[in-house]
Image 1 (cartoon, rainbow, N blue to C red):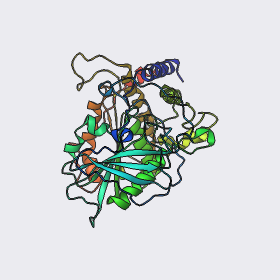
Image 2: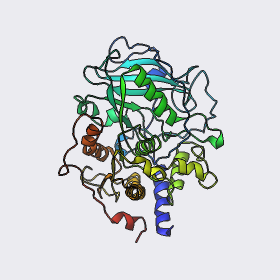
Image 3: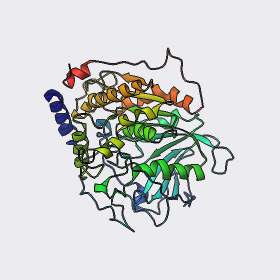
Image 4: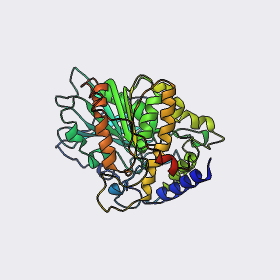
Length: 418
């Protein structure tokens, strides 16, 4: 690895993970289980139980926080024991521990006509976790039809409320005939079944999302089998990884500013330092990069590029870390924005592998722009026609209006390339 590239990545890691992250406060129901939000009579539900399925794939992430989302500093916590918290608080975050038995919905909280928060007891994570759902017009649990599903994954150091808090996703999908699902994934869960020094077990976030949540929605909330997934930063990892490792589960994947190749020079160090910044054992996620290279490979989206054949793919990132057209004039620059050229660096590796296997993703590497929500929301909107098409709701826009591939060689200069 070139010294300049190694130096930049080390600097980016030190700067990015050393800044305060978005506070992940416990939701109201965690501290006051008797409270009810939105419509009166938020009901306790017991949906069909789902037995946890196997799944050992892991994935990592860069910090998903942005300056606009920061509310207060988050203090790192000691890495918990996987068996801690039984019968009380979950060891993996500010949630109650899982209840005995299989995965199930234990409560519904309606926040409006379309917005529903589910509390799911997950043995895979050993936590009772929130999942936000936007239902379409005409939806009911007793309907005879099902609806296609769009999963939206949040970034690191954030939570399941981020998409509704930071974007107008509710109004944007008001007339969309689909169910929108925004699951909790932890501040540093990385959409992964953690290796835990070979012991595995909780937290198994991948199992929670791809098995427990999916199956509960399909058996109790009229979710269909036509699915799309998209995410930003850490969630971009999760989206691409889930699509690659669960072939046939999704018809579209959108990844906005996330690490797409986890074994490139400098990236394992960045990932482990990011985990340490959240108070976690850096090797708990998927072990040592050398001794456990098989686990790292198993959880590298780029290693499974051929599995992405046959689906719509949208990949985007800034390439320079400089402020762009969506940043306020005079806004201060943040080292967190180095996440953009780093994500572009990894995206190029995945894109090359996709093309080798005959896959033609839509790529938007747009030069200037920060690691922040205005750009992620723009890229989501750019990819929205592809999402609708994949879900069978509307034909994609024609080539003249679809996002064009835009690449910029300055990223290679910045990373020490020639």
